[in-house]
Length: 178
Image (cartoon, rainbow, N blue to C red):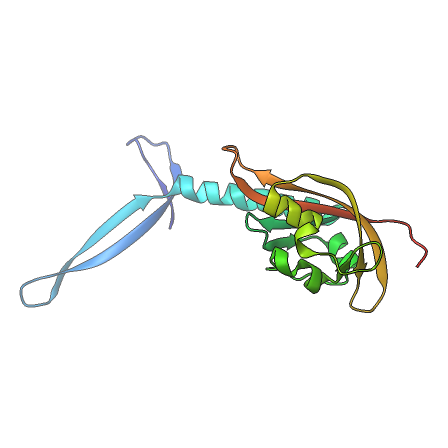
């Protein structure tokens, strides 16, 4: 609950957020004879959640504006984000795909046209082997049957303690003669 209150006993009003619990108090006959109210200020948590939501919205807006395709995974490689450009390149945007299913789900092929071994894909290498992959080439066969040759870069993402938290792949179309 949002509240304005005088925290210090002065006329200065503060704004804050509170979790409030009301619990009835019963007498020996089982009748309610009072109410216990527990109020916990959670203003900092609410403000932190708002900051995180704002940062996430800004990140999504920025990534959606890019011409280059961007795919982000969690630490295990499960796809959690696909921007519009990547969706257009693939002709699809399927989330929750794990590394062993990248090739089949997104119809990924080597430059010579063979199915790309899932463990050798740039994003898989970033996720599974913590590699930074640059300028890798492959083909995407879209659901409508058209193919596009792409070039991409992938890398793991680490938090401030050096723990892998995600991986990212950026891709763009190469000029082709298909």
